[in-house]
Image (tube, rainbow, N blue to C red; front, side):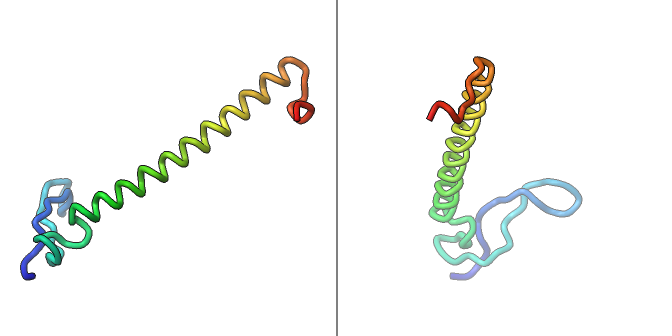
Length: 81
């Protein structure tokens, strides 16, 4: 396939503006970066990583608040196990 990717991106010199992607089109007139299937894969991966991060943060936050509450009541969190 010849030609350039048909995606429009933000960039350019002298400030942010919409420009055409300059990469060579490989599939369905898109480059490998901007092809809708590639975009969906990246977004799914990012969403999974963000979900994992939020779950980890929520657990750490809960543990910290539970420990603070135990200390407030005069109980050492290590004694609860």
